[in-house]
Image (cartoon, rainbow, N blue to C red; front, side):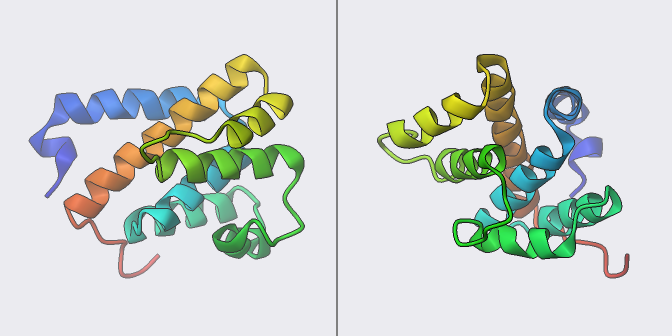
Length: 143
């Protein structure tokens, strides 16, 4: 299925959110967030896309591999760690929402505007993941 062809208005709406976060969230953090949420959601299409995008933008393969175990990795800074923790909490949103500890930690290192943008970025990649996983989109066989 190709959602851009089948439901173009909906696709454009999500793409509007994507364009917003691309211009309002630090690119390095955005790619880490996209990769982390995609790993958690089991979205091979998005894991492939965002790891390739991050590599092309100069991110190290070492850091990208470590996103899967970011809590134990020592080479993410305070803001990146807060963004990854928030990504985990929002992506795995449970009955009690985002834990206060996760939110408070993020609020200490991100301004209110940055934090709002980060939440929108996390929500956006989760929408993309749900579309891709549900429609069984596969990464290209060759890059």
